[in-house]
Length: 255
Image (cartoon, rainbow, N blue to C red):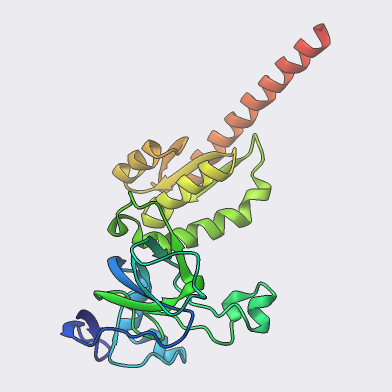
């Protein structure tokens, strides 16, 4: 099969012909890749930054940790939540579900985890080996190439919003700084999970226009005065909420 392989740091990856991955355990899953995202982490790997940090990434290896596609083969009947042909998106890290960390809900510290695209061959190839717990079935109408980046970029934005959500009750405002790839996903997750007013700050007018189209309530141009603009906007929003509450209180008293 064809695969995008990094042979040496600071040298462009090459498209190589390599063997297809094989099932190595009962909970393994082979996925036929339909889309693989390019993440900033891939650039860090190319630059050798992960090696400098002590991460043992074997060279040469196949890049790609934002992956989606179709189940091709499963390790055994123990894998029962999907079957060959199912459209899936893959969590970046494959975990066992059996060790103490996994059983305590601390999957990211799994004793037996592996990370395709970082510690093992990734998804910039025709096929990828991962673990059953990392495979999430999605609507077959979705195209893997359209959603692959959500496997990491989407999780990053979701994680941030999930932490902030308890503070974002009705009447509050949330400022998203930067309307790039992660920022746009963050806007959509904020609108889906919270009732907060979403304000986006960016230097790019086109990015702000797109942010408004996908749900942002206000866009603020970052021109050096963005802090004052946001403060002015939120002060006005607070006054509007106070006026609505005062009006409702008057109505209740009249009743």
